[in-house]
Amino acid sequence: MSVDTATVARIASLARLKVGEAELEAMVPELNGILAWVEQLGEVDVTGIEPMTAVIENHLRLRDDVIDADPLTGGGVREAVLANAPAAEHGFFGVPKVIE
Amino acid sequence: MADLTDLGVAAIRDGVAKGLFTAVEVAEAFNANVAAAQAALNAFIVTTPDAAIEAAKATDARRAAGQPLGKMGGVPIGMKDLFATRGVQTTAASHILEGFEPEYESTVSQKLWDAGAGMLGKLNMDQFAMGSSNETSYFGNVISPWRRNDGGNAPLAPGGSSGGSSAAVSARLCPAATGTDTGGSIRQPAAFTGISGIKPTYGRCSRWGIVAFASSLDQAGPMARDVRDCAIMLEAMAGFDPKDATSLNLPVPEWEAGLNADLRGKKVGVPREYRMDGTDADVLASWDQGIEWLKDAGAEVIDISLPHTKYALPAYYIVAPAEASSNLARYDGVRYGLRDLPDGANLQEMYAATRAAGFGAEVKRRILIGTYVLSAGFYDAYYTQAQKVRTLISHDFRNAFAEVDVILAPTAPTAAFGLGDMVSDPLAMYLNDVFAVPASLAGLPAMSVPAGLNREGLPLGLQIVGKPFDEQGVLNAGLAIESRAGFAARPERWW
Image (cartoon, rainbow over all chains, first blue to last red; front, side):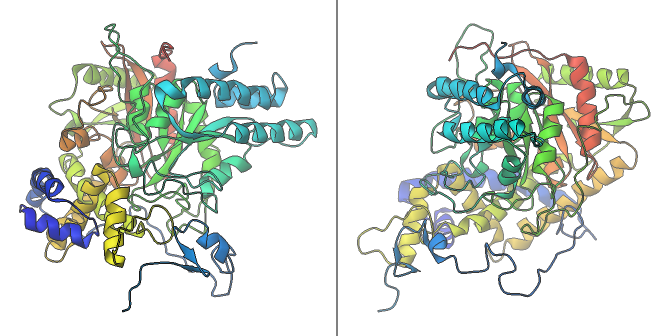
């Protein structure tokens, strides 16, 4: 499978990446080179093989269902959460208007 | 007094404990080397000399009070800029995180500080750990301290993505540094610069507070001048962390105490599929030499087959970008990092403009590949197929380890290449990780140790891959090679 300019533009839009015309044109052959190369995976017989879900057998844990089980992520740290925000306003993350 | 910056982790730790010198003297000596090399090597993104001195003073005070100094007591280290450090800029070498000062400390870095280490600075790297030459950093290339012996001064790649770490350790700017390895990012730079580095079993070191690239592959590990120093530092870095869902709930072995270069009774596998076209003749010769060294250490060497080896790299270049495209979705100009808000832009346009301005070309390339292979209609053909091939690669190793204890292979197919030599061809760059990626896909412990110099006077590394949880076996085989290789070469100081 290979991609054309329109497909790369669609992927870039899905990935929320603004890509100019010239950049788009340059990316098409690069991505096609990589995609053509990974296509060799198609020749591997994977009959009856499960896709890998974990490299090392491990059990997912659940934390205790209590408030502030981990004080770092439990809440009450609004200032710390907002400290690096580009536009913190009134205790919230500021964004451009989304409702007319 | 001898130059303190010639000392490694064990020698510093022991010397401080015995009172041969103070931790502050050590920190001052390394701070001076860091400052003197910064303009030429660009190994650090930010330097933190005061933090190094402060930690050293604390160690000296503990010694004066008769308290234990910790596994890394008095040892100043470099911290790869992928680890969140409280109040110290953490960027993953990207523009999108420029100025980001975390409100929290990564588990691994906190463990190192708790063990008595101090921070010399945040080390340069490939942007978001995507690269094999440290040429994708927003903060400029790292220059390897090594030069070819042809009298030319062509700047060489320190490897990547942990290129600041490898350059800094080999240039004696720090006795050890943290690295992270997603598809070879500890081992390949270690090989390129004549140092040692180990990626432990997936889950040994907590990923909490490490900027995520490909979460099923990312694993932290130490980079240092020898095997013992790696063992010491890995003990300080490893351990169960409830904040990381894939952290292994296992005790941390005493790897340093367990070091033993006697390999009698051990079996070493040599995978025939790793004898690939395009591998440098000197690299193949060093591999043969490594086989002889391990035989000399008492090991039995066995020819093995890892039949799906050639598919590891293409599988990696589906799985890793897929995970990256998902992980990097968080950089949107809202909660932290860069925001680019063109006049009149709406929210969606702000996301797209921010990400376009904040990510470098290689990061965008991988996000696009990842988005494509996960998109509707292509998911099964690419992503599911790659994850099945990954299962087969893991089976290859499992079958091999039914027969052998460790596997010996080259770390990289070439010695260090010149900066700029590969940047125009992403695929050629990816192929430099051909020997490193299979162990990453299978989550196995793997290390690179220096084996010698090639005909250009550049270091070559040998790689040892072990069974899950058997870092000790990997370290011991590494020690057997190290003690026979007698690698003492170091870059001549030109900076």
